[in-house]
Image (cartoon, rainbow, N blue to C red; front, side, top):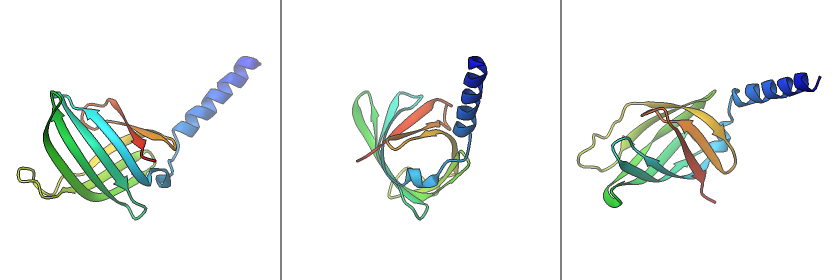
Length: 131
């Protein structure tokens, strides 16, 4: 009997974790620092707004040195566990403004952080809420 209850509890957790996520949990400012496959680090802040827009201000580092900065403005939506961004790079001389849509799977959202599968390499990345 205890093993049956444990199995039911684990199944309930699995269904809860696999369900639809509340987009309101993403509203606000988030900090990120991602290691990219080519050795660069992408670090900065993203603000997700209630109206479905976002802004991202980030700095790119290589070997601990700042090599570039980037600002992106756009829209986002969360459907089930799939988040899709449509962004435009603002004022960067070597990156075209309009960017293709980016979709990733959100794996977890709490009040302090959210996690997702990187659309670049499939690794799990995290952003932490700025208080």
